Length: 306
Ligand SMILES: [Mg+2]
Image (cartoon, rainbow, N blue to C red; front, top):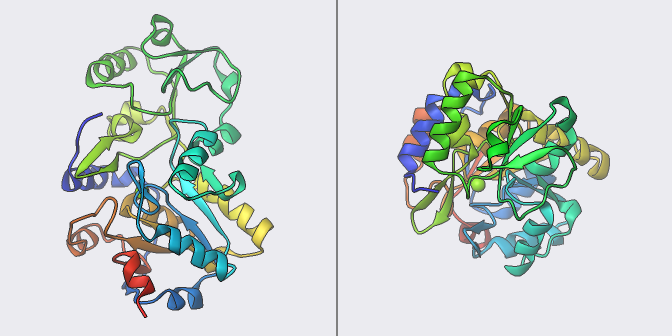
């Protein structure tokens, strides 16, 4: 895991823009001044986790009040997270530990959606890039990196990058150029803000930025790609009776939350002060990318001022 600055991370996303879903955006973003205005426009919420509820291992101040406000206003929500490095139970335990006691049905992770669409028996053996001590939820033939059996696997599953590094990456890419193999990636994020100006390199960094020959072998599950939105929208329709035009995706990242949300046909809101764009003027990034959210919110304080 190494540091990556905002501008570099943004440029990396822009460089592979053609690999991300296409979407249409509103002409202008509405800058939000009060929570009531939001409730006039939307009935259900999809909330990103990192940069919206927490940064690193701490809850964002105001996130708890925002969640309570949704509860009080009877506005249902799902947490929609590209969290793939650990089973959902770990994420729920983490949220609980920072005072956000969600139940499992309120949280949708890309890892959970992966298991719905991934067929482990499509290949005899899988090399898994993830922390070994966190067991997989499904049983199939696999070896964790960097065991010798990992390198001989027929296909790969990239869940988390904590145990990955540049040396392993170099060897992996070289081996894939010798023999192409399918790769499934359950976290398309290039980077994640860890707080105090630290940005980690996530599985998307090691895969989305690859050359075309390797990219053709890859399947991505998670924002901004459609599978996770499709699953969440299906559940929103069934469980809430709310259609996508009345749902708001709240996120801190233009290329995952906002682009993905707009591609899926929901409304979007960029939360600016905590995650990907913390300490940045966001205007030039919106101008350069043309990724325009429906709403912009600087921070939670803005939402609750009287
Ligand atoms: Mg985020």
